[in-house]
Image 1 (tube, rainbow over the protein chains, first blue to last red):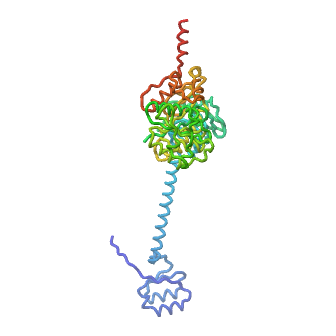
Image 2 (spheres, each protein chain N blue to C red):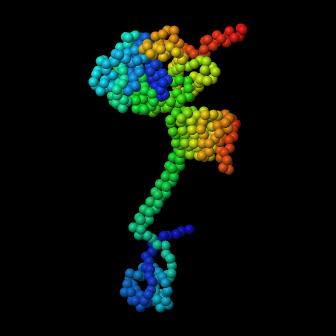
Image 3 (cartoon, chains in turn yellow, blue):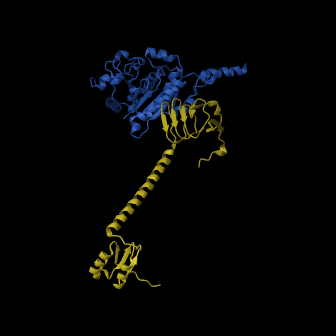
Length: 209
Length: 270
């Protein structure tokens, strides 16, 4: 297929007064003879016959693909760029928030929590050392402590995993957990249907990865 | 350049001052130059236990305020020429202490002595914080009972957060002395075992000192119990002092009473 591409000069108008229109075209015939005349709205027979006699190429009620002025093009490009910038910014923000959340979500500690120390954890806590008598841990997330607890634990997460801790003061969702119930090597304390349930964590269950 | 050791406990009455006096003397008897500083301002006791109460002319607060020089204020021990003592003020209170003044005094003493032993006041208030602030190491004294251990735990926590060395990213060496152990009570389970104490506090054991009635009498007479070669507590302090001076002395298990063991053996043959 062979094709050629042209830019065409178009004179677009709407006719309100036929006599004025014909007079205007007569006066500017030299200007309009190379133009494509597009008439929007009603096209009366008198105007049509006039255009035919003048051998002007005309069309009625067509929506031509229009080019844009340079200014408009530039403005459009600018808006587009801003939009992509904004969406990139939003995506970045989201990613950052997510990574912060991930970072904050799990706190891994190997410190001995000595008497008088108070830990306030927003997310989950994995503690690999002792909590001594007189220390307090407040956690909004889940708590796993793999060593003996003798201090206080306040947890409002979904579950806790604790070793046998006869001297600890454990409050889970505002309810004190009886120490004697924590009789296994590792115990899971969780809330199910508004009831605190304590089950032993079996060796084969632990999958740290 | 010497080493600064703070003797701390958290709880009062566990034997800090007695331990300071005995360890200071023990170190001096091992041939090292040692100075003891009583930081318990307002409640000085160390001078009495050392038997030097009538020799105090200037105290450490006067030295820090520039009213007297360190040389003027240092009191030489009657027992060893390696041992010196700097008394606390009995009339002032703990609020007179100031970080800069304490640092200046401690650095000055460090240059002249091998060991600078600071006797901390009980509690964890400003007096205690100033004592530990510029210490290179700490000796924690506990009794085998829960309240003493919890207070010591708290004191260690403060040591780990407020010490000058820790703030500069270094670590303060911490050593434990378990004082006033009664072998019978440990055996019967009435008293905490040293393994349990070490598990709770998680620091190195420097030594165990058995309960000894001779300690009170020795303190009253102003002759530290370490001078009594027959005293079991004195022997324990001598072993600990030797360890501090770099000698290898095996840990003696004082939780097994010799007399008790003898009784048991006799019981078998009955």
